[in-house]
Length: 390
Image (cartoon, rainbow, N blue to C red; front, side, top):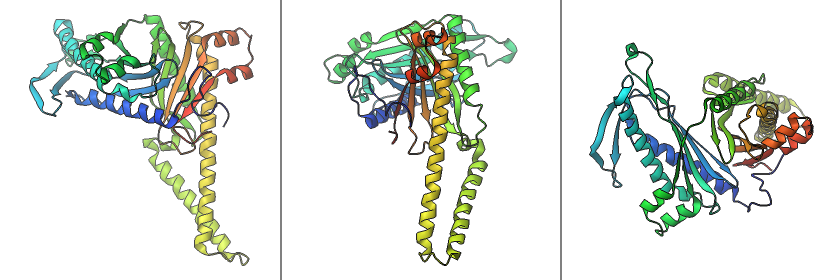
């Protein structure tokens, strides 16, 4: 497969255990999602809550938390470390049609989220064992907008602002080694309320829409496509980051019949070939031996098709970044456009995660005609990890 090998590191970065990095990101995604879902109970389904993580060399691990945009009421309880429920901290909160009540309830909800993220950084962020001391574990929280349950009151709402929580690996290690107490550690966590202007948000959102439209416009039945939504965030000291899940078209839930039909056709081809070979007088092998060979040939073809489909998907992402990355005009010359993809149900020859990066100054030069397309494609950094891709 063209491009750099698994999570290829530049000369300024140390060699990393790629399998371990993959496990660490997966583990921390799972822990943070569990903490945010079990710290409280919602009267509305919270299925739209997502935690997506990505490792970016020289920056660290970034986890983006997004929640459902429509939460009209909620009930939460806190647990002690022994698992006992604290009834004194339980309650039901109804988000009204705006005003002071909605603001107070929203603030209580935000305080709960803040404390949960602080706890995650204190007790679980040390799972990022390979980070450099100056790299960080960053949690970007993007809440939904509270919308009144009383539709007759009008479309009034109260929105919580996004926030970024950032802890240095050195501080995480110190608090776990008890060289730093919890109070001091919390003080060291950089909390920034994101107040991006409307134009920046609109450009970020528009590029996300382009990603979904372009990458899902695939005539191939077995091609890869985006599954779910495209998350985006902007870090002042880094650039724009987009995260999404991808899956082969036939693997999406609504295509289960196609998946079954595809497997039936594949097995029918194996049986047909077995029958033809069995009739040949010059083939004296045992039927089981012939069947095993045919099955292996069928599997090899499927692996080849999977790999080809993935390579084409990867190429389309690179093309997308070259064609539309210039629209992100808020990026400074030394900032990056990063696209992080998680492949769901990935075959063993396809990476579980892949990260694409491109510098804004290269995009500017390309747009000015100083760099041709072939050269620009080589400038797209592609880091793959989590599978047997070389």
